[in-house]
Amino acid sequence: TEKLLEVSGLRVTFKTHGGEVNAVRDVNFTLNKGETLAIVGESGCGKSVTARSIMRLIPEHIGKIAGGSIHFKGQDLAKLPEKQMRELRGKEISMIFQDAMTSLNPTITIGEQIVEGIIRHQKVTRSEARRQAIEILTLVGIATPESRLKQYLHQFSGGMRQRIMIAIALVCKPSILIADEPTTALDVTIQAQIIELFKSIQKKTGVSIIIITHDLGVVAKIADRVNVMYAGKVVESGPVRDIFYNPQHPYTKGLLASMPRLDADRSIPLSPIPGTPPDLFSPPIGCAFAARCDYALEVCRNYQPAETHVHSKHAVSCWLQDPRAKKLLASMQPPT
Ligand code: SF4
Ligand code: MG
Image: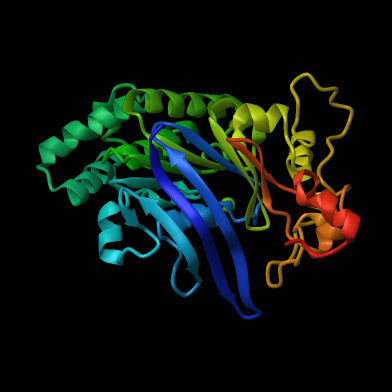
């Protein structure tokens, strides 16, 4: 496996009237070539902020990357001048946003919008741009692309619009595609088609995908590896099978327990995790999940759990798995 992106010690803070919010707190992960990494967690856990940081799309008046590095092809994106970042955005790393539809203009044909985008990025002739537009629409499964190019946004269904957004994101053949909740607004059948589309595109182009979602059903269908985020941190990470069949963190277990099952008796209510995430103005000094965790001990409230490896690819940050816990319980001394 070839490492494509390496995020280390990433910290992102937001400015607010109430002070600084620690939205992303020391996040580490890698993305390999040709794989799909899912980042999952409840809203506000920092998953979208992590993605926007990679794209360096956190507006200055809102917040900033306060620490860490984002290594990609020999460069640290966290420190790259905006001018160089602009060259890279869309071309090397592309993102489909949660509110993607609003970025399409309803008064201009889809073809013109795609063709303009290609010309802006690649400085090719109009006829070459048109050829590429047809090619990319074909790749995303839009039939009769020549005639579709002449149509307007309102002439496309929700699923077709999402295919167009994916086409636009892929038009410059990026090596990384980031998709923030790409199926959330779609009904179940269309959702399944879009997931299949991501997979077939990956097979054809070798693009690496980061998918951000709160939906574990989507994760199960598409991800190779998973980062579970809670309160701005990755609390568990590993291959998708380990996360689903051998989850270690109480939060991951809670997410899985609240997942709707196809075979389930619908009369039994789901068990969402009671409580709410902590206030990130002043994050808890110990484990951020302690207030909602059935297993929390005193040590959890007072000290951060360290990352412990279940095996070389599966890691968890929880005192239940931390080898220092036994010693600590015996002595009740602070960890060293
Ligand atoms: Fe629960 Fe403690 Fe593990 Fe946090 S460290 S998840 S509070 S057991
Ligand atoms: Mg989000």
